[in-house]
Image (cartoon, rainbow, N blue to C red; front, side, top):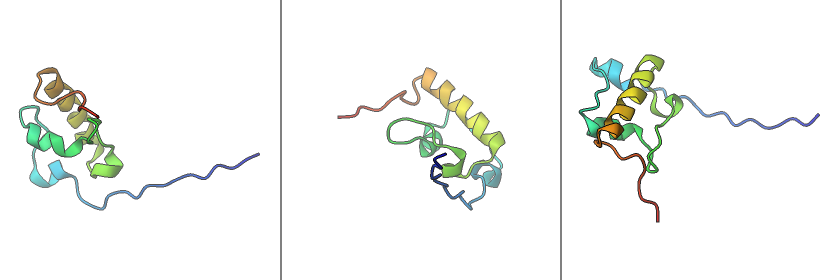
Length: 79
């Protein structure tokens, strides 16, 4: 049996961005949502952003809503 090496990523030690501000993710604020998107347009994971599970779920929903209304791009142009 071959054992595979697992790569563990360190969790961010920061507090949740939305818990600290006592706010919720909102599709009408694309400048805040843009902080949690990669350069390719993908939503960053909780390990990378340090957001709690409750706000990560709401963030994903609000990002999808903002993309549908064209506040955020679905993908970025890669050359």
